[in-house]
Image (cartoon, rainbow, N blue to C red; front, side, top):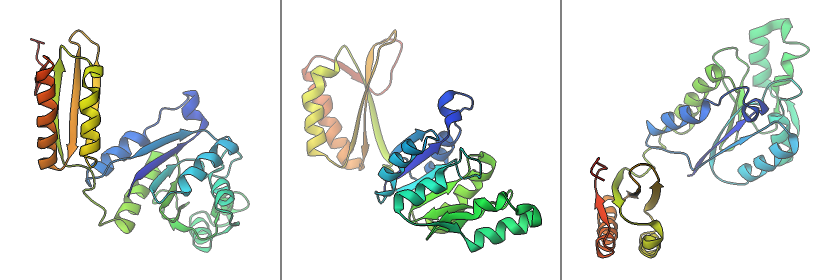
Length: 250
């Protein structure tokens, strides 16, 4: 199962606010041996929002969405999800009960609008003010406020995905190549990519005072050692240097 994130809000794109969800989600997933496959930051424009939601909802990915589920005119996530999946947006009985339980008569006429959810949704309890988020299939929509959404994220993982663990590659080997260029190693990298499709290969050139290429392989330990041996042999045959760590001598 791939895991994705949708982070929604014009204020992030304009720079009025800095996103905090991406790094937090990374750390929460890492504790479970999981990692993100993709992340999209999108504003509140309805056409843009529906375009990316259509992409996301068409997948079988596990997706965490942050932002846009309030009642103000610029909060369009609930409405956009309903349009994309072509279901009505209607009062969810559990959401209504939560909001009424928190605010009483003050829930009307405005706060109660946040109980209008796409048909077929399940609510995500909000421990801060009881205005819930919602889940639809493997998509989970939460507020943009970290103090609300982060506990809700943990709740979703604990209640729906307790057994989803350790999908990220556990073994990684990194080498640092000096006196060489990526283009000279393209052929062997392509071969490894074809011959070891389950491994994740990364090549990161650094153009600082010590120019070098940081190359890594992640995945099954035996396959990593086998593929890395091939890579090292080609590096040496090309007359380049490699080491397991970058030192000042490079």
